[in-house]
Amino acid sequence: MTQTPAVQRVQSSSPWEEQFGFARGVAAGDRVHVAGTMPFVGAVLHGEGDPYEQAKVAFTNALAVLEEFGLGAESVVRTRMYLTHTRDVDAVGRAHKEFFDAVRPAATVVVVSGFVDSRVLVEVELEAFRGAREQ
Image 1: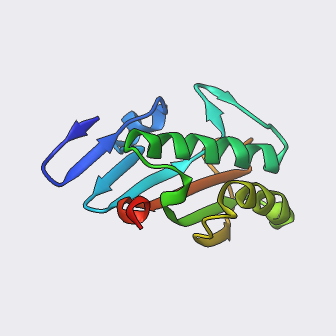
Image 2 (image 1 turned 180 degrees about the horizontal axis):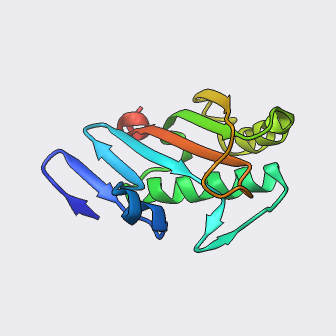
C-alpha cells in the first residue's frame, strides 16, 4: 500500500492497473473507492457463462481490496453492478443480496455493451465509509 497524507492506494494483480495507470482501491478521507472489479483470480476467469458465479467472485475480489484498508462488507455504502445482459439481473441481484442484505447499501445496476474481455458478464464497484464500524 502506498500512502500520502490524505490518500492511500492499493494495487491488485490486474494487468490493466499498470496498463491504464490506476489503483484497485483508493481511500480518501473517510471514503474508500474500489475500482471496477471483474471475476478473475489471477489470469483465470471464474464462472464463465454464469452471471451468479461471476458476481460472487467479483464481489469477493472487491471486498478483499476493502480488507486492505481494514474494512468489510458492513462498511459498504454503495455498490454498482455492470452487466452485459438484462437477463442476468436476477442472478447478480441474488449474489448481491448474499453479500449485502444486512448492510443495504445504495445500489445501481447498469447494462453495458461489453467489457475488455468478452467472456465477462459482470463487473462491480464498491464505495465504503470508514466510520461505519464506529456507528
